Image 1 (cartoon, rainbow, N blue to C red):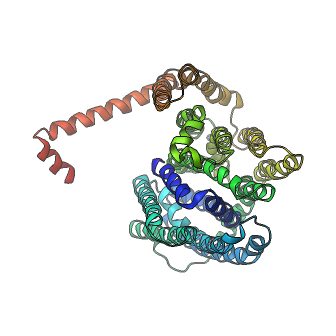
Image 2: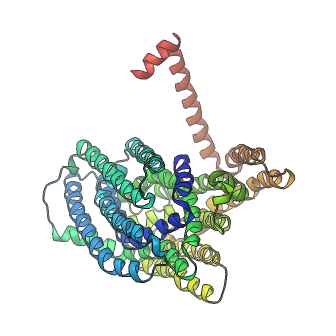
Image 3: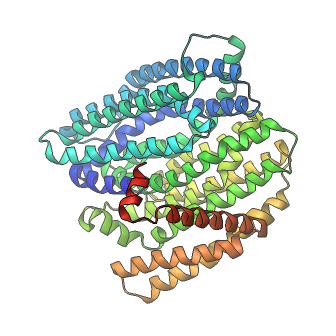
Amino acid sequence: MLITLYITRVLLNVLGKSDYGTYEVVGSIVAMFAFLSSTMATAAQRFFAMELGVENHTKLKQIFNINVLIFVGLALVILVLAETVGWWYFNNKLNIPPDRFEAAAWVYQFSVFTSMVSIITIPYMAIITAREHMQAYAYLGIIEVILKLGIVFVLIYLPIDKLKLYAILAFSIQVLVSLLYIGYSTRKFPECRLQYYWNKTMFNDVFGFSSWSLIGALAMTIRSKGIDLLLNSFFDELMNAARGIAYRVYNALYLFVHNFFTAIRPQLIKSYSADPNDNSGEMMQLVFQSSKFCYYLMWVLSLPILVETQAILDIWLKEDVVPDYAVIFTRLIIINAIVETLAHPFIASIQATGKIKKYQIVTGSIILLNLPLSYLFLRLGFAPQITMYVSIMITTIAHFSRIYFMSKLLRMNILNYIKQVIFPILWVTIFTLLFPLFFYHYFNSSLWRIVGVVVVTVLSSVFIVYFIGLEKTERETLKGFVMRSFAKYKRYLAKTKGGLIDKLKHFIS
């Protein structure tokens, strides 16, 4: 998260506001087509976890091979769409400075290639998470972000068009990281050793599930990338730069929570697979707990940024390069993300049932309202941030629809959900707001105030979440985990008592 934020700072300084905005809006076109891949990725994870839940390794291998064929075909479909419809939109509709059109074309083509490579890698990433090899997932993620950090420094020193060079280097990093994912999966998991396999029924199962998921994936893509293109048509690339900065902050925070939930998703699906009729036991407890923990994590990380947005952006990006509207966009996007955090366990649980037709039609249709409502308000002359107010409202309404489908498909007790999830997070939100807001209002703006807000937020949040946000059994579990960790650390110190050299030898061994 920290490296991602630093990369954005360097990138904005190297490219400048205009080129940075151009990169963001051009990438949005490719992302509009890549929504297909997110749908298929969700399907792959579900089917892998279901077979692992019942320990059917033969079928797992067959499904993996079929998924590889599907994703290769999907990459080719996206290539065709991007080079026809997408290329037409790029040439005729985008608001790009004429002198940067050639560089933008380079960005577009290499964004297409990067997207294709990323899509082909998805089954391998899905099997790593389904098998819960989270250590490998973490290491590969760290390697990826360090490589991305390296390329922004290359941009500084090479005397080549920065926008073109960044597109080429980003593609190169994606190829290398994809090879690492594929190599690790092939070496560790026998089902990843490819051999041609075709089963029409199995293909129809995977594709049938995915086809209904397309509605939700398209809706989410339109909410983010479609609004980028809408803003570009009403304003210019500088507005996209402001929104791009806000989304970089959002992505850094969201990645933290997403990786946390990535470890939980396979357990939810396996729990349902093991006992689909258990609507009040292990699975529902996991749904409620993960909803709270995802929210607490996102809230504690976001609160200092929400309070000190202007000061943090000025320090992070340098005051003279912060685009107009970046502050308001950042705050509203983070608020939207906090509300949306509650949806992740519900989405995974509903998908585990496989009964997603009505859910996708209703919830996807609600989310799709983002684009027409945003267009209407912009035509009426509202400020650009109206698009985010619309998004927050739609996200809230969509969550109510998910609550309804959880009660219908999984017989979730709504009163229990309100009591065990909504009330605790409301109390935590109210009490944790008091301390940083006190610092913000009673101290002058400075680096020390930002440090004070962060420290007070973390310390007060730990205390408040522990005593108000957790149930007694959850506190006991957490206390036991901390005590075991301390005991393990003490044993480690006892073994390495022989001095610094012995400790170093132990660490190396």
